[in-house]
Image (cartoon, rainbow, N blue to C red; front, side, top):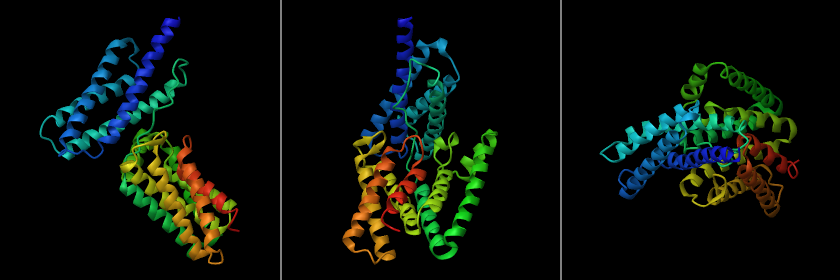
Length: 331
């Protein structure tokens, strides 16, 4: 029995290792560097290595052909085609098509393995992560929504009608979340067509970030004073996209899970600066030194919240925590 459990454990640990390496590979090839020979060679070798290990894994444990094996087949085939493209004259467009296939198959397999692990005592994965590719359109959408929310809250709707508007949008968002669980076609239409430019691959299987954002807005509007609400929204509006864009490109050293030291530092810096400028405009009665202390406190809590948010979504946790801290100073 012990030998069987050891074999079982090693099987799923190898899957987990492959998923980790596949996560890194897919994240790396989002923007192919076809004119960089060293990059092309490295990706070609990595591609073949992962594909070979997937084939060996499936061959060694043929008796375990379960639902995930189809995803493994598709991933192995896509990796094989990707390596072929890299070994000959190709185009970014063809590689992008293969990348999108890898992205989708990875998240499908991730979702299945997460559910599978709940029923397997010998295997409890903790390192597998969702893909979070760079998406400038999503970041701009993020920033635009935040600015629009603050302008309408400050100059148009006010506190009561802003809450009513957010509750109406939240009701619609929740209705869509529920309805798409009953139809794969409707789910695919919403995620890939309606919100295709701003959605992330894993949102096909999970609650959309916009729904979490609306939930967070509703909560802070109910619980906190006006300027604290605006502070919470400002941090999410500017610091989160800045950390996402710059952290993915320049953050090499990881701080926690997929979050880098550089990205977290950017988050803290941008959040602190945004709140400091906001206080200088909205609360000129607060001297610059206390204002800097408030801004730094809110920025630090926001950075730590974004860093350690795992099971929820930072579109919810960041504005709530930042508004809560800001409410201690901004009455």
